[in-house]
Amino acid sequence: MSAAVTTTAPAPAETGETRTVLALALPALMLFVGVVVIPLAMTVMLSFHDWGQYKGIEPVFILKNWQEIASDPYYAEMFWRTFRVAVLATLITAVFGVPEAYILHRMSGPWKGFFLLVILGPLLISVVARTLGWALLFGGNNGLANKLLMSLGLISSPVRFMFTETGMVVALAHAMMPFMVLAVWTALQRLDPQIENAAASLGAGSLTVIRRIILPQIMPGVLSGAIIVFSLSASAFATPAIIGGRRLKVAATLAYDEFLNTLNWPLGAAVAVLLLIALVLIVVGSNALIERRYQEMFR
Amino acid sequence: MTRNGPIALAFHALFVVFMLAPIVVVCWVAFTPEGFLSIPTTNFSLRWFRTIAAYPEFVHAFGVSLWLGALSSFVSLLFAVPAALAISRYRFPGREALSALFLSPLMIPHVVLGIAFLRFFTSVGVGGTFLALVIAHVIVVFPFALRLTLAAATGMDRRIEMAAISLGADGWTMFRRVILPSILPGLISGWALAFIQSFDDLTMTVFLAAPGTETLPVRMFLYIQDNIDPLVTSVSASVIAITMTVLILLDRFYGLDRVLTAKGGERGDAGR
Image 1 (tube, helix red, strand yellow):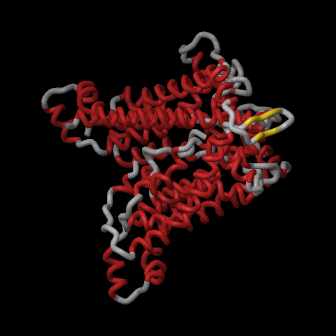
Image 2 (tube, helix red, strand yellow):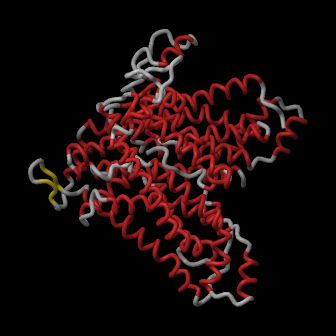
Image 3 (cartoon, chains in turn green, brown):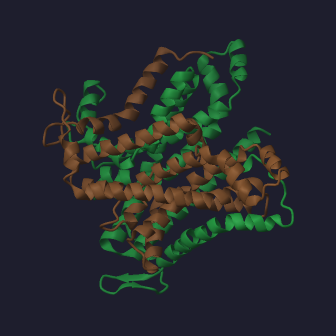
């Protein structure tokens, strides 16, 4: 939310103020142009360069890397896996995060604050430490996760979590859960409790209230949470690298490999640029769809 | 407002267990007295915490992370405060675009940023240095510093400034004596949040760190890639303890929900 950026409407600039604005914003602007815009442009350029085992990077303009990504099924499979894992993690966070946000919303003051801290806190705890925790829980066939699931009777034989997409999805869903809870919780805060009361006084059961009153109103929050979770999952690095191991590559871990192990920088740059473009298209596209849909609804 | 039913509370309990399980298990295993990964039940020992001292690369990486976090968050604020003042008090063409640019490190995947920084810093000849890490971290934590500074600057009572002007304060005096004191809580929180983000960053830093400039998350990541033993759990437990301390201070001082909702709805660094 860019609430802090857009809510206040400062006075229109008068002559002479332009200089003040420039003096204030110029240092940061120059920093960003120099260290963000230019390096990103250089990375796009890099993806068109040539590379060889012995000759290194050659600054020429060729489509070799892009053709390789387009033609080799290895890359299609890898991008498909990235996408699949991200979608599944998003679905899990929505299925569990939305009810949890609603439960939190209905709690009384001190409990609400405490559990909000417990659930959002992990967001700020080192992702390496959190993923290590999952690696410990998953570890082998007699890991704690399997013991627990089997003693609860949810599964009959151990599930392989380590070095599988299942494990990746579970650990990613855990890492992303706070974002979904936060997005839905923010939407719930804006809800008018009187509408809920009105529905109840007209004889609506609590399930009907949730389905007909609450859910439609918080849907924009759920969807924006889903977009955040999806784009973060699709570009996640630590979790797929530790849980997925060396074999099960996603876009971020493959780019890392090309840069720091194979040293084929142009190919790695092409993978990264493609990931960036795909994410921008998906995020911008779904944002536009959501906006159009909800504008129609509230017209 | 109706209370949560028993089913809702049972769901809630399982949810909380799910959220805390990996963190608890790391801290628990860290206290094992054994030489291998195990969950201690009767005997608890600090031997693996003492072992950290015998691994200079972890101690050194910890120092790098602390310095990097403190320095880059501070430098980031030096750029963010004037930018936030410009964005919050003036309307000028390109204002929206400017704030979008300043928040863009939240939108660009960190792996892409890491690659772009690696390419850039290598080609200007500072690849693998501490300076490169500081500049990269200044960029990555900038949105957090900017958000909280903006929130503080927007919430300021402008009448105090008018009073200062009417009493003859010039621009610099006004900033030092009026604006700075009133946005200071926001600045400190912004610094703390930026510090945590820098201290925890792996995805971007893993591309830039060289032997000697490895941060703690990078060192831990590279260690885990080879093997997982109780040592890395005690290091993780220490990192968790440090982050929790900053979090609790931040919560007492400013309110964690305020800090998190200021960045809420957008992206943080959790994907990494």
